[in-house]
Length: 465
Ligand code: FAD
Image (cartoon, rainbow, N blue to C red):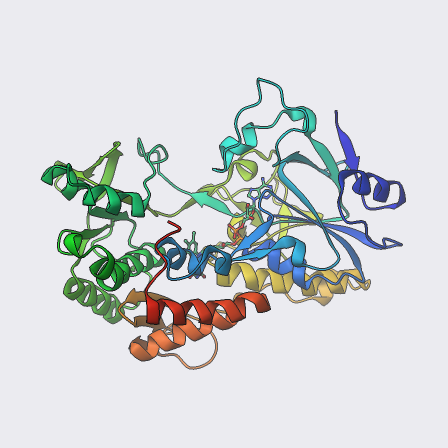
């Protein structure tokens, strides 16, 4: 069965039938946003609801504040501090589903619900929360169409494994490893393996995870598992000779010195060629392959297009990232490079067609969302695209936490304000203050400093991971 959801009069009934919040539609245009990440969630908040009837489609009923994910993995923050509910945005209809295809002629998006089937059959697969598998877990009979006047695609990317065998199969939980390593019957070899923590990818996310892990070990494991404290090793691998290649050379050197003093091993020029249940194979520059055991493996080596974008036919895509090529007003282009009317892409799944590659960051996605909200407002008021200047990314610089109350701020290439580099404790204050103020809801603006304070005085909460 296929249902058509639109936001005009007949359609409001259909929306209500689906249980979406009905909105006062009138003559408003239908704006459909795909994705509830940095791009989609921000746009849904900022879009002018007096001009548009806004519907957001995403498998996640929440927004993930990705810069805090590393902190939540080791209990510095609770998971709720890194999420915001989509249903908290006023006057936005929400459908929990995966966009599957776009029909450019009927201007509809086919959506597969990211919910268990109402009447499960024995053939229905168990619900899996890992993305593509979840997509496959629902029968196509549950699909429905959502009609749009304006469409903004903000479905992001997924982590790239570069086809390395074993990467997606093996997941380990940090606390289980610490408890297992404490068992009296465990052999010394098995204990050494469980306590070997290996992080693949030396970009900001891998570095921040290594830093959080180091602080967790030095501040909390020392207290809670004193018998394990000297046996834990943290190793960070990258294909490049060192870590944080996008940062200024002096800051890179500072971070590597800091890690070396803290006992975090950085191994550059290392390519992980295979992942097994309890080992990884690392090829060095010379080509020789070394097999090392791991207890915890964190994979963070960049991005690849998500399945939805990859399978959309007839659109201009970047050959390398497979993301959608967009014109200077962020309009998606057809296969000939002609911009499509009223169809836009923002965030990680969008690449400007002027040859300037933008970094895949929250900063770019939220600037695009702000630009898009403004552009849609102008279009909604009857202004033409020519009245609006093209999207221009402002580089505000980069920040990274490197552990032990230290961070680095690199504004050496910033396109506005003073160009500066900062490292150490003051940079850490800047880093924390910036992200605390960036939290979107008041609940988290209050909760985040509270959890930081609790972790500082009473240690991290190790019950939940
Ligand atoms: P996302 O935020 O990834 O959102 C995509 C959304 O689309 C999700 O809600 C997803 O569920 C949904 N979706 C996917 N497929 C479909 C579909 N078929 N139909 C409908 N919805 C779909 N950047 C920084 O600038 N600073 C940082 O400190 C930082 N830290 C990071 C830490 C981590 C752990 C990670 C993973 C990333 C980090 N980034 C950071 C990068 C930043 O999070 C991304 O660049 C940003 O999330 C991109 O925003 P987006 O809206 O394009 O995509």
